Image (cartoon, rainbow, N blue to C red; front, side, top):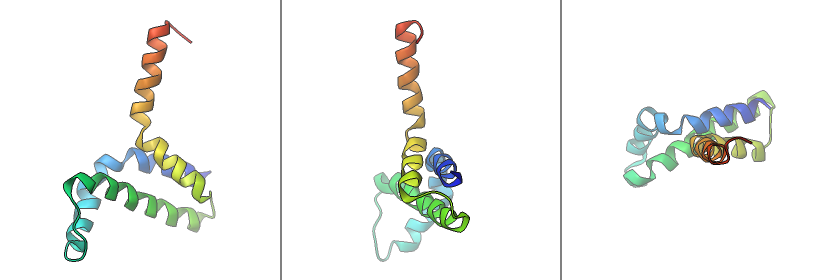
Length: 94
């Protein structure tokens, strides 16, 4: 369960983690692998999921499925929230 919660939080942090996490890693691996600016968000997501995967293993919490699902939910949380809010606003309630 902790791994799922950490993955949701990590998914929410993908954007803010690009500058301090993904860009230094991209510079580090630049001689071997070229990372386009459009791929920086994906690199940030992959690095955060790697960190959560390591934490999940150390905590003996969660499976790969729940870690990835939590990350995806966190990554798209604001879009999901906006969609649900628009649906509720259009109906005038649930």
